[in-house]
Image 1 (spheres, helix red, strand yellow):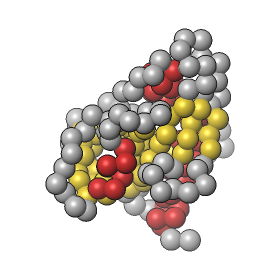
Image 2 (tube, helix red, strand yellow):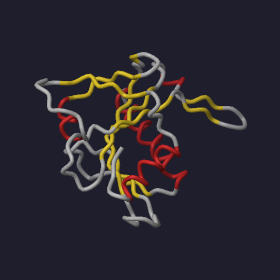
Image 3 (tube, helix red, strand yellow):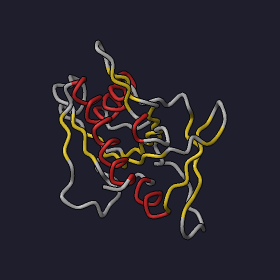
Length: 165
């Protein structure tokens, strides 16, 4: 298996682990032709939609570009266009997992715990403008948009009231 396939599997496992911690269901679409790699669904929300869901485009990179405030990521224009706009049934997000270059460094195993290296960021491109770019676009993802159980819960809570971040 090449490193890109490993990155795909690792990013999916990373997000599914956070979703499992929250009790969210996850599913993988039969076909990825609309820039949706993973669907996450909550259950039992009390305001608005009882079982809200969000759709996620997953990316994984060993390139940690940008500064302290923002992480820069080059996104294919097809993904950019599929993720932006408001004519969607549920909110869509881009999740970008940043990992070390060496696959062996992605996880550190100890007797009492396992550490996953490094971290994942999220962004909504819903309000992003049209672009004349033909192949890709560089987007800035705020480093404060760290994907955690708390931030994923907040995204799902927003979806339960028909909102998006």
